[in-house]
Length: 134
Image (cartoon, rainbow, N blue to C red; front, side, top):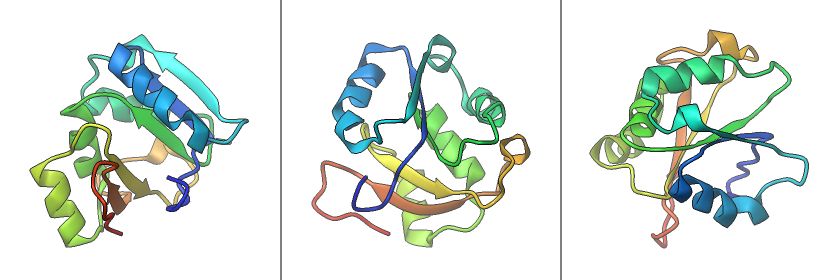
């Protein structure tokens, strides 16, 4: 995360044990002033519900990280991507491994306007592999 300058100021994490364990593992990579929210509603959320939750974000939030579950996270990343690297997109379509990060960029400042095709898949990061694509 640090090498790729992934610096969320807000983390939304499912209340599930494995999601909270993932959060614990990445805490050293997060800023001290990051806002972390554990949310039960993320546990069974589909991509549409995750998108709806992101649209509720405060406009002062510049970068958010969702820690949750598949297939919802994979579906959301695929829906949001409008212009990403074709190889990364193919990898994301094929499999979104546990613990991996789909790094998407969104140039608009209003979360309520976030919609399908409005973000760009910047990278897929898999901590279990030696190489990272970008």
